Image (cartoon, rainbow, N blue to C red; front, side, top):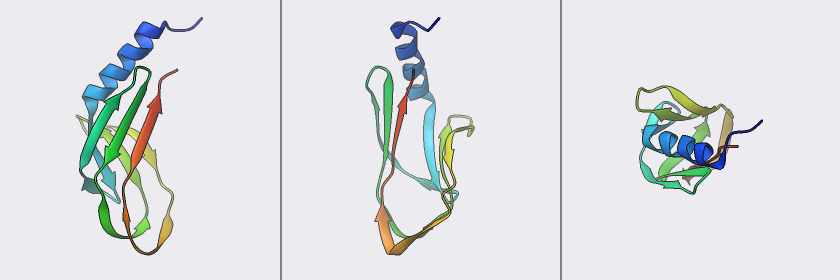
Length: 91
C-alpha cells in the first residue's frame, strides 16, 4: 500500500514551511530560494566564499532539528566559493 499523490505533495508543502536554515561547518548560510515542485522540494543557498574544507552540511527546521545532514570531511581545491542545493523527493 502507498500514500496517495495528494498526501505526498502535502508532506512536501509541510516540509517547505519548516525549512529554516542551512549550516556549513556549523555556520549559517543564507537560503536564497525554496521551491515546491509537487513531490519535490528544492532548497538553494547563497554563495559562500573562501571555503577550504567541508566538514558538515545541515538543513534545519524551524526548531533547529536536522532534516538532512552530510559529513563529507573533504578539502576543497584552494579557497573556493560554493553554493549548495538540496533536492528532496517524497516517495
